[in-house]
Image (cartoon, rainbow, N blue to C red):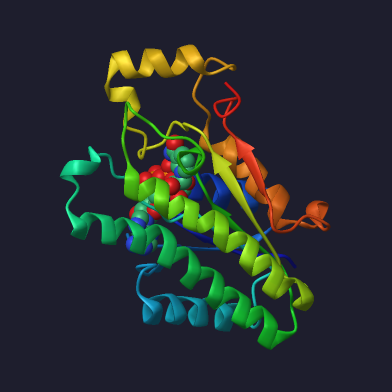
Length: 232
Ligand SMILES: NC(=O)c1ccc[n+]([C@@H]2O[C@H](COP(=O)([O-])OP(=O)(O)OC[C@H]3O[C@@H](n4cnc5c(N)ncnc54)[C@H](O)[C@@H]3O)[C@@H](O)[C@H]2O)c1
């Protein structure tokens, strides 16, 4: 039986990953800070992450085979006005949260002798500045995720654990704010080679490719799902 933990499972990409995984025959456990995703935990809180993982592994009677970590937040503001507390919060949810979720799952995989696959969510914001929607802390937090993937892949590869990221472009979820500004939305669509936003399910498909055995020789890298955004 293939068992997968999905964080951020209450909305958007995480919800699409949980649904698609279920349809593909995975046994799925969701984690989110809100009700409705299975297990409630704030990914910035080590004790909450650990106790959610303990509850999941004890209900399964074993460690997960995969993690897809989708919990994250997006904040937009001109950098000269950013409150340092907002910077810290964004870094905490997106960078520390990724570290805590990956650490909690890898520790359980190693202890159980059940190595698997860890997939985290980066962003095109780490690869390209954005004048329309400035998000310095968000970009920096996703740059941290990108570096973390390479480090964890090297550290945990000898134990058989693969670590990769999916790097979405602009995806049509609750997180996406550009659609509320018609000028910005039109400018964005004009530079997207595929001429449309992505869907959560298109990102979920890449996440589950990396989570499963079809990607068994892929680690320490990323799959960009951006409709050509970074190429244009
Ligand atoms: N939507 C996009 O265009 C886009 C683009 C690039 C990257 N991403 C990344 O994809 C991931 C998922 O984004 P989405 O579009 O599905 O967003 P979303 O807002 O629809 O879902 C994010 C989920 O994370 C949960 N979450 C937030 N903070 C949390 C915390 N502290 N603890 C636990 N759960 C928490 C939320 O409750 C929510 O259910 C994020 O990492 C995001 O940065 C999204």
